[in-house]
Image (tube, rainbow, N blue to C red):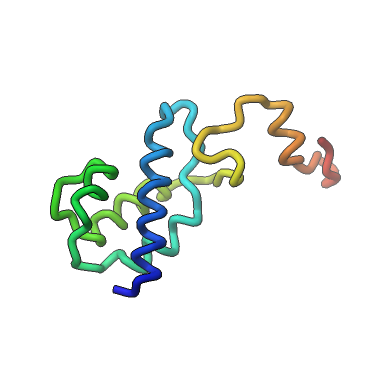
Length: 112
C-alpha cells in the first residue's frame, strides 16, 4: 500500500468519526472527497490499526477494503453533497446558507 493512500485514509477516518458524531438530523450529506481514497483501497486486504477500527465502530482486524466499503456506503444514494463549510453539520441558519451558496432563480440569475 502506498504511504500517501494510507495517509489520506487516516484523514478520512477522522472526518468520518466527526461526521458520525453529529446527530443524523443535523448531519450534512457525506462528502464526495471520500470517494477517491475509498475507491483506491476498496480491495486492500491489509488490516486496519486497532484504533482506526474503534473510530469507525468496526471490529478489530477489519480490512481497509471493509472500511472503504463503509465510506462508500455513506455516499451511495445521495443526491446532494455538502459545501466544505457545511461539513460535518448542515448550515443551521438558512439566510446565512443562502448568502454563502446562492442558488439560481427560475430565470437562471443568481440571487442571494
